[in-house]
Length: 198
Image 1 (cartoon, rainbow, N blue to C red):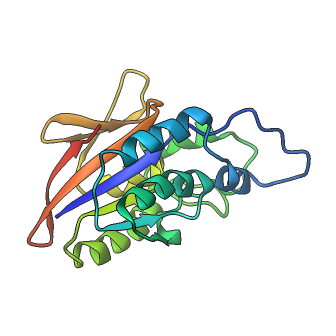
Image 2 (cartoon, rainbow, N blue to C red):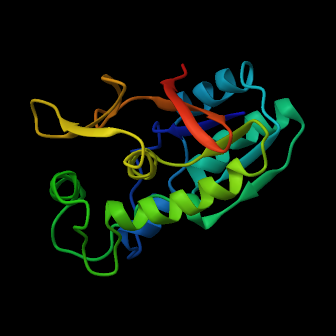
Image 3 (cartoon, rainbow, N blue to C red):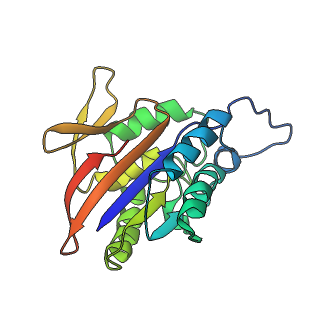
């Protein structure tokens, strides 16, 4: 069995909110950029799975719809796959990520730490592994990083950003990319390998 963790990071950036909205609401409703739509279409042409799960975020659903269509499957939406909640603070997201990279329990008021996100993602993963079929999970880079802390070695790049390694090979870092796809190979209900799948 294989589980594909997918984060399409190419979201629309030229949006101006004319009404007051919390940062987490803005992130949840942000649509894919045209380049993100193209990546999603390309992914749908090569990814074959038996089940599809998505976070509640617009970008994840917009990516999942192409794979769902090409595989003739429904999209199952689950809040446990949502991105790490920012919460409330006068500081920006970059400061939060820098602090969380060093302290996995760090969070803003009404937000989540990486360890909080790791627990909910791990609970969801256990329920998926029990189904024993190939699954695509459309989620978000920070949520994926949180989950993979269970299986990977944490390190840091020259800019002091979090890097995750599996068997001495870097598989995920905090550098911006178009799309991140991690393939988890499962055997006897355990993760036996993690690779980049692009």
